[in-house]
Image (cartoon, rainbow, N blue to C red; front, side, top):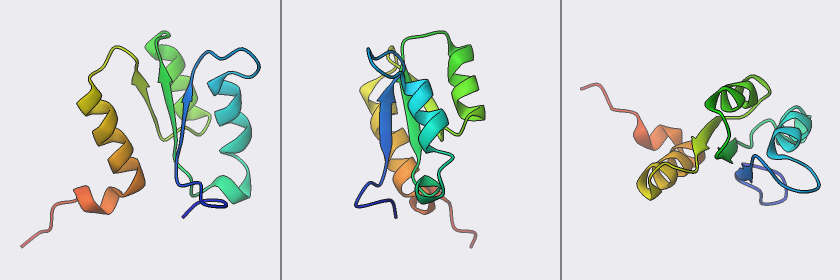
Length: 88
C-alpha cells in the first residue's frame, strides 16, 4: 500500500508553510495517493476536521484526545480488516 513506502500520512492542522488541510486537499486527490489514508491531527474546531474528511481525509483526531485513541485510529487506518469481526 502507498507511494514509495508511504503507508499513512498524519498531519497537523496548523503548520507554517502549508496547513494539514491544504496537504490533504492536494495530495489525497492524486491518483498515486488514493490508497494512502490521511489523518488530520488538530486542536482546531471539530467542524474543520469534518471539512478535512470531505476533502479526502480518512478521519481527524483532536489533539486533546488520548494516546490510545491516536494509536488505535492509526492502526485501524493502516489495517481496517484486522478490526472487523468475523461472523461465525
